[in-house]
Image (cartoon, rainbow, N blue to C red; front, side, top):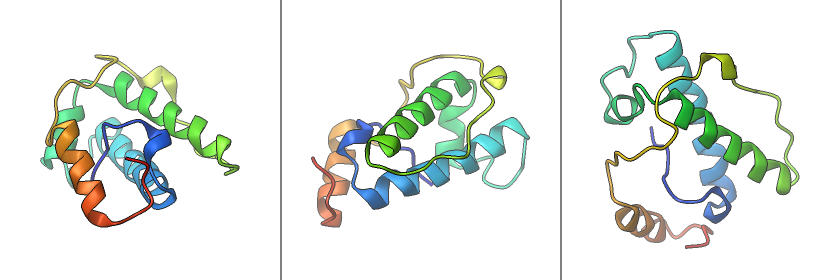
Length: 109
């Protein structure tokens, strides 16, 4: 499970859509207080930051629409709370860029 901390317009097709799926899973875990993956480092770093997670989703949706994709899975903004910015990282931005470069995908980094 990973939510990248680099701009969505830099992500390739697979990473953008994969992150979108994982964000919805993470949202469900946090909003519905599900136990599966509740202690995963990615889940823990988003606790108390549903506003920031919602805003990341909106960035994803904007990028998906710019690429011509349909989007039919909005999040409920009324459930958002907490910080608007994610400042806690599992990997630094530079480390995330290296991870993506090493994958040999079409991310624009």
